Each structure stands twice: as structure tokens, then as C-alpha cells.
Image (spheres, rainbow, N blue to C red):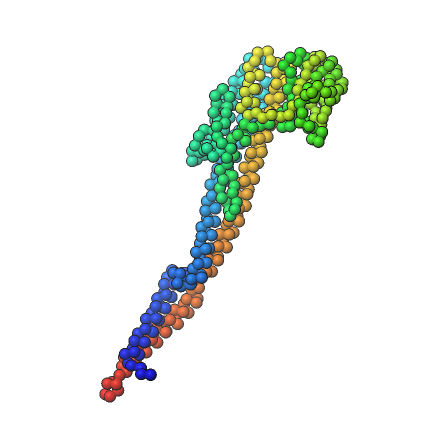
Length: 396
């Protein structure tokens, strides 16, 4: 095979260009600190780097979502704490007003403060967050959720705003106001006791309890005193369910169908109390009921005590609703904190893996730089030698 001088020179030039290209790649890698600066450097590694970059970006977004959710949930918890403080004050005033030493005038003063507390409670229920969104409006965050037109009505929806806190993990960042303030069970949450309006004696229904859930059938019953010291209980169809004696001096518990009702005072013949399954009532209606009793004249008697005992039971259920809501908020915040820690771990893993895929090993790079420099110098030396090799030079 004939090898021309020009061909050998061209081969030398090509070799020098390749070595220069290799040296340029090493210099570029050392300048950026990245082993992969374009997909052609390592197609498989580049694809893996893109995947890891996306996973790291997703985790960073989850962390931002968690920060936002924690802020909103923290604000909800603070707001519910304020509601608890208002309800505690309402309870204190109610117990104070039930004292027999109070007069109609002093009860009217208590009612005036309760009116202010009701307004304060309504304002808290219509609280906004830092973005101007209503906290307890469900998904209708731009519209005021509670409207007072005589009574208070809820005009938000039943939705919950959710955020993605991790792969497949959605966490609610709020609660609809209807679940917290409106649909609250009356009585003790299972059944409620109310005195008949025509009672003539001084009997007052006090504490109630469910002692045997299996015996309670959820029916409606009528407790009637056939004499000051005797009673009977009949169901909705008039069938006798229970009967017994009653001590007018000591009072006592009336028990039937797994429930107990404490009675005190001296009942009149024919006085009765209804025992029925709990219904639902808003916390605002409970306050309205308490205020109404304190603004009536001459209410320091058994009818007022019975009415207020019932409203106190309803108030306790409202307090329980707030407590459960705060517990749910706390549980979500705990879940977010745990997910945040997990996301931090995942971020570290992704970044470590990404570094292993695309970051440059400087020790190897320095060695390659030395080798490529030597190779280029060798190619240049070879080229310079070839330039001087020709037949004419030989003939000289």
C-alpha cells in the first residue's frame, strides 16, 4: 500500500485535533465540576441525572407545600384556641348567672356580656389567613362563611383544601366551619333531656350519662312523676318501660334502657321530662338560648335551671367539637413534620446519587489532563517530524 507524505501529515493533524478535543473536554469538566456537561458525554448517566433532578425538584416542592400547610394549620389552631377561650368565658358566666342569688338586673348584665362574646365568636369564625382567605369556609375561601341574620347560618361548603406533602400523601390544611361550629350534637352527645313547659314543681334534671350502650335503643321516652316520690318511664307508644320511687330530700338517679338522669328538687304530680336521641345545634344557637334565659324576667326557678342545664350540656358538646378539631389539626401537623423529615432524607439521597452520577472526580480528571497533555505534545512532536520528511529533503 502506498502511503503518501500528505496523507501522513493529514493523519498527524487529525490526531492532534482529537487530542486537543479530548483536552478541551477535560478542561471543560474541570471548569464546571461536572462529568456530564451534555448528553453525549454519557447518555445513560445523563438520563439518570435528569430523573434524579426531577425527583429532587419534586421533593423541594413538597417541602414548600409543607411549610405553607403548617402555617395555615398553625393559624387554624390559634383561632380555635381563641374560640376555646370564648366558650370557657361563656361557661363561667352561665354558671354565675344560674346562682340563685342573682337578680334579673345582674342576669341582664351577664346577658349583655354574652351578647358581646357571641359577636366575638362570630368574628373569630369568619377569620382570614395572611392571603385574605377565610379559614373556615371550606373551598369557598373568598366568601364569608358565617352570616348573621337573626340566627347564624353557614354559607361555605363542606370541602377541605388539600396539599401534596409527599408522593401519594395529601393532607388537609383546613376544616369547614359547618363541622366545627354548626352540626354539634345536643345533650351528652347520645341523648338529651328537656323539661316539659308545664311543670309545676322544682324538679331539675342534672347530669346525664350512658352507662350501657348495648341497652340503649335510641328511642324517645317520657319520664313522668305520678307522685312527688314516684315516677314511671314510658316509650313513644305509651308502653311502661320502668318505674320507681324518688326521694324528694336527696334526689337521685333515674335509670332505664342503659341511661341515667340525675334529678333534684321536688317534682309536682304530672311533671315530666323527655329523654330523646341527640339532635344537632350550632354553638351560636346555644349562646342564643343562654342569652334568652338570662334576659327573661323572673327566671330564677326550676324552668330556668332546666333550660340552662340543657344549654350547658350543649355548650360542653361545642367545647368538645373545638377540642376534637384542634386534635385533628395537631395530628396533621405531626404528620407534616414527619413527612418533612422524610423529605429531607430523600433530598439528601437524591443529591448524593446525582453527585455520584454527574459530578467530576478531580483526582481522575487531573490524571487524565496530564495524559491528554502528554498525548497532545506527542502528536505535535510527531507532526513536526513528519513535516521534515520528504524525498527532496532526503536528496539534499
